[in-house]
Image 1 (cartoon, rainbow, N blue to C red):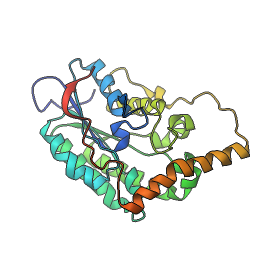
Image 2 (spheres, rainbow, N blue to C red; image 1 turned 90 degrees about the horizontal axis):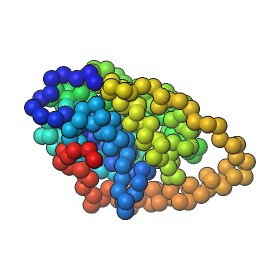
Image 3 (cartoon, rainbow, N blue to C red; image 1 turned 180 degrees about the vertical axis):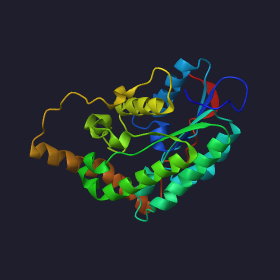
Image 4 (cartoon, rainbow, N blue to C red; image 1 turned 45 degrees about the horizontal axis):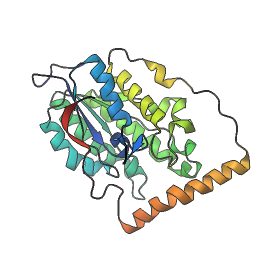
Length: 262
């Protein structure tokens, strides 16, 4: 893996910053435990760097500014050799979304982590309108945020997993039933994309390969699926916004200290 000299002696350290995707929502549950792309990326890294220590500071529902405020300081204290910063989707779902402001929060994290000697990776976001048709009006927001993330990453030597440009990223099997979080398969592909972006030994572009064709759905089944999704997931999400609550209220990071990868 391409990296500068570690900022400390001892095993390689990987620290993940972000929201629900990094926490692992969609891959497991709160009963059996969440896995997610960060856990899976830690496994890729541990295969190449035995003894790797891994911490995950992500908390679901967090906006980019709060991630910077709450997670950046603790991440720097852990002296990571590798860090991932994946955030912004919660922001672009808000009515008062400002792509420049969100990208600025991400860039502050890129700058601080790379200045501390960490090799940093991030990811772009696929077209949400192809995952949830009711979200098609958000496409310009996603495109603008991706463009700004790419530019910020380039300024700081941050590796970018271009999941936005992979056709497989919008395959419905890559997403959980809420269409906001990746499925176990989706998390596995994101981890592989980040591993390739970081140049982890043994990684390649196989994560981009398409899945076997799906049987086409009838218009009736498609409409029923959209109504079911709106009632089961969109409605409750809007309800939390109106109440000013978050799915992450009262939650703390699942893995705040660097631990060996099981």
